[in-house]
Length: 346
Ligand SMILES: O=C(O)CCC(=O)C(=O)O
Ligand SMILES: [Fe+2]
Image 1 (cartoon, rainbow, N blue to C red):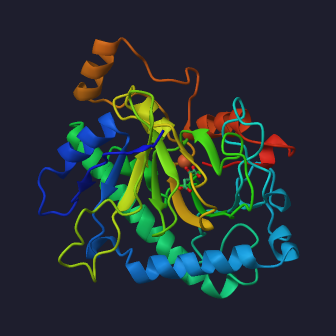
Image 2: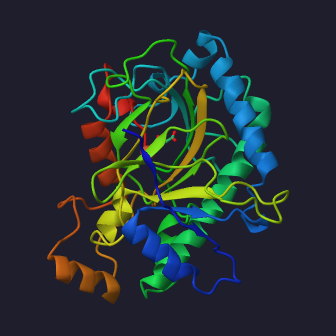
Image 3: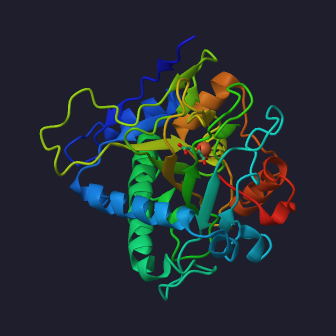
């Protein structure tokens, strides 16, 4: 059976589109995924994206000892940072027989002095400023999106952004490089690049490469639909300066915060249906609130009305802060053969 293509809209979030908040809310409350037009204002140019992909490729190609020297287990317990070797993560443990076929490198938020609170591999060290600039641009884009969501929910425009202001304290936000190697032989119904899961945080930005598909989302009808790498039917007139649209999805925390109005959609990464395909590289920015942000319901009439109609409350009763929520998710979902506090992902 062939997989249909998900119909995810591309939204212009620039000032010239006064409907951006409403369009984002509509896409987030139906698909949970949206493409954002990547114009010059994001600072995420094609060149800067290509550069980070090149760094990622070089890191994963490095000798095992180099990657082991920055392994997630070598970091402070409880910190979700460092290299995860193949076999460590299984995103859908209830269904999967084997671990995800991938490697990942999780970077923390940088410190104010321009360093990282974790070991950085030798081949990435000269590129720390590049990585930090990329992370900051990702965060600035998340903040713009969060301000738009606040506007659409009719709450003060800084309601979410003030709770994601990293100058105020620590956050579980993770910047992740992902590498899914080609497998010469695999069992299509057993091996999977990333098992079905939803992301934990508020928003995720995802960067994919042309020619390296595989991401699928579970639609409202329960079918899997593939997510295109480039959703544009026609190259844009300003194609040279405009990069691929950036894929954004809602995480569980934002779903909870909005009593389910914004959807955290289940997704997975599959091997090519035919042929062995290519290695797949992707880059994800998992944006989380400040650790001590309280997950009380957002004071929005739009959310209250929605919750009232559905008679639903936020998930995760008893969860008080963003950090509690993250720790609970890391504990229950992740870990294959490593202690819980050392392993984590989305
Ligand atoms: O690599 C991808 O395309 C998606 C990865 C993902 O969903 C995740 O790591 O949470
Ligand atoms: Fe994910």
